[in-house]
Length: 127
Image (cartoon, rainbow, N blue to C red; front, side, top):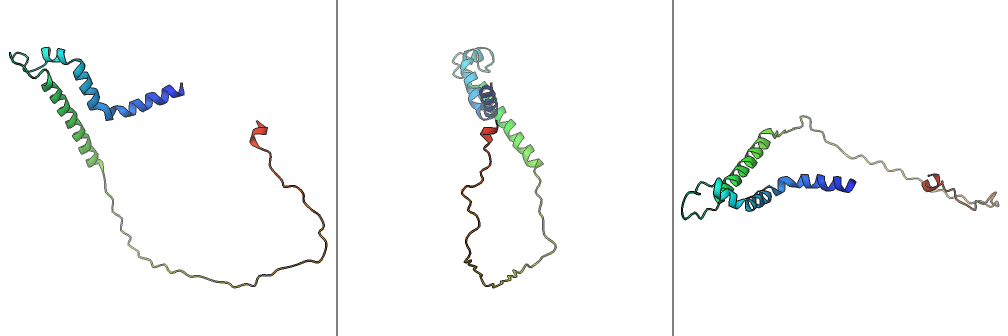
């Protein structure tokens, strides 16, 4: 079910990118019917259009829709310029403290020896 959902959503997202290809395939499938019924030059004896005029109209309409959409996006885009009114100069203050390293050594014997490391229980054992 998840695979079907992923495939269908990705196909839906790809539809706007494939509009021209879909339009052209639908035209090729119905070209005979378009040339007989819708074509402007269908009544001419030597008709070489074969419905391509309708394809050109559809492509022009698609281009106009895309341009309108782009224009609407450009109108809704707002550019904001921000200028800082206060200019601050930051200086780097480095404090260096020199300390002597102290090493301690003991002469005494160790009190205890740890032979294992604590390991928390794994998550798979709890399930």
